[in-house]
Length: 124
Image 1: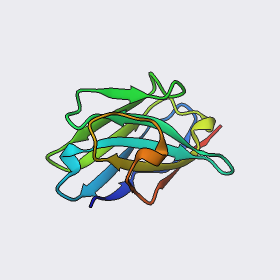
Image 2: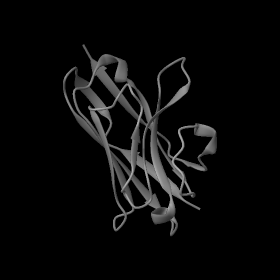
Image 3: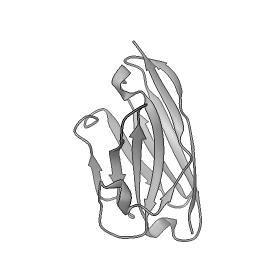
C-alpha cells in the first residue's frame, strides 16, 4: 500500500512559479513510477509528468514541456513538481499518483494509488 499527500498548491500570477510536493508512505515507494496529473473543472484528468523509480527517466505532456520539472527523493519518499512560467490554463487540481511497475505510462487508469489533490490557480 502507498498513501500519498500533496502540498504546495496555491494562487499565483501568470508567469510565476510553484513547487508541488507529494509525500508517500509505504515501503514500495522507491519501486514505483510516480506521476502528476491535473484536472480542471468539467474536464478529464490529464497526464502532466512522470518519473521512473530511479529518477533516471522523465516524461512530460507537450503542454508543460520546458516549463515543468518532475523529480524525486527516494530517501525522503517524496516526489516534486517544479512549475515555472505558469499560465492561466494550468489552473487545475493537481494529483500525485503511484504505479508499482517499471514502465512509465500516461493513462490514469494504470495507476494504483492517488493523493487527494492540491489546487493550483493561475491568475491572468
